[in-house]
Image (tube, rainbow, N blue to C red):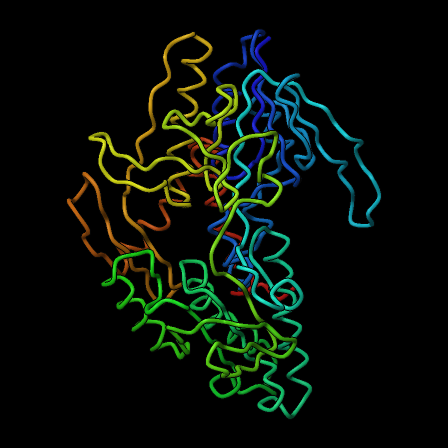
Length: 438
């Protein structure tokens, strides 16, 4: 039996496991196993909506055990701990519950083809105080923790009178990439909706403040300058205070300190500046990594030192080339890249099992979209669809943004289940508060 093991149930990993499970469900000579340290999956670009309270986590999570059962693959829970390339096995650390009691022992899983797609974590660049005092949005646990703290801050502030001095309703978001900008826009709306549910001791316009901090000279520095400018104008109109060319030197219990010595007081600080692969990937199993701990892979998605191990998504440093051999650098850490690589990897596995030559992966940049909640969506479309760098915004951009998530749902659920889930959310939304309050 050829054992295919996929480590990481994010956008790329879950899509790959689902497609392979379906494709080889009747083939007794092929097994597909998905490994993840969590019980459920949530699409990572949705984390800011969970954190702000604009999305109910339970309506969008995917249970790995159920997904595996329905799509003919095996799920094993546990965090990747060790890799033995000689014996072709991986070790999973014991899974523990909320009370730190062990649920599973150390597990050893054999593979013939190993695919690592464990995503990325926030990169704090060694900034003082980030680990101790800043919140992050790396997974659903982080998002739910931030939301709980945000609601508690509002309730606590409602019963006090010295809000301005204590800066209890001031949120600082460090990093004005897509995550930071989208979170700022969503928080502007949801914090006011939380206050509207009986917290009349708070003046929303006066007391609620959101600051967005960016070290570069503009927000969304990785995207088109026109897109950055349009987005900054929109969120500034909402009242979000934008600070560009501002490097954070320290995160403190009561706020942050910038490189120019300026202090910004706040109750909640979110770190959303930069990403890197998990630290344990550095020299993991003797594999080659770059300075961001990403596994170095060739254009076939095979790791540079082991052809039986593949990597995709944010944890992979894949050469960024188009079909003409142009471009340069590495593939950016985006959901669209993980989706493309998962599709390519599916065909790579089929070629590998058929003993056919593997094909190189070519990244296709279809543009970027940034959601500003109900206020607007801005973005640009690129590639062979409309030519180069056509800027879009408003309702059409919002539809395009929503379609990205629907494509992900279609890839793991199929058309019928995606339609039913969408209808169920629309119906329950009418009977629930406009923002999650717990």
